Image (cartoon, rainbow over all chains, first blue to last red; front, side):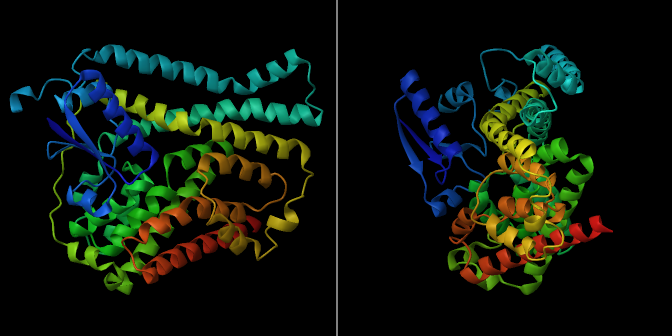
Length: 77
Length: 356
């Protein structure tokens, strides 16, 4: 079971990343809980400088850009 | 982990660098070919359609089918270049460079880095706090935050396309100037007490690590450039078409000197009014610049138009509401006041210089 967090205050790019992650999880059948973190203090506690951020199992995988579908698959693997 | 470092992130298709370079070269050649023949193409299309350039409709149409592809081509080129540049500069790297820098040199660097660092306005807060945490002074942080949205690649590409390189350069230097001076003033005022308490506690509490900047290869950098074009140009092309469309209408139908009495250089109050009008407008540069360009042809003064543009782009109400989470009202007021004053001054200076 993976714990996935999408960090972002709710702008278009953050939503795009969230839906992309959900798609990938659904298609690959990975067991995961996906949470969208919008609270600014929690986002900052992950020490990301720019959103959207992607956290998998308590590790920041990427921030400030939307990774490609293949990249997300690899980050979740 | 280190043994796996060489595996390309996309995993499946191996990236072929020579193929990518060939594609970039072909695209560049095509780009130059089309770009240098736009006037001819527009003339030809009007000719085929049998529409005379002497009619108002013909003028408007010619303007439209010449300007839209020109601006889109320029934007694509600039955005692609910036997409590649972004793979070298991350916010983390910028922060590391600015950490502990003194007022003055720090502000100049911050404003300059603001142009090339990837930045989206919804990241303003994490970035703001991340900078302060790592010991970037408050004034230097502000210089970055002012320059990053104001002097952006979309605005510069459009200004270059519609007004020429001199105006684009002027806009850039004025924007940088405002960012640097505003940041220095905010720094000198020592307004650390006007940060929200929880932000103040975080100040200087961390270190400026370089973060995990991926070590990309050139094939991937080119890929990032293409991705940047897709996301930016894909988002703003409609605004450009609409903006140029309105501009074309103004061009063909609004009488000459119509704007002179409203936005002319002699109308002293037009600059503050233009700045005020710009604050609640949250349009991107893509829609505004073509309209402003058309107004200039109708007697509006460049300084007034530029003040309006800067205000729309740099002083946005939604951004201030977001900043309220980390700044007390007094600091937001000072920030908006200083930037607005700077923009108004730039407007007057422009109008004065151009009249001489």
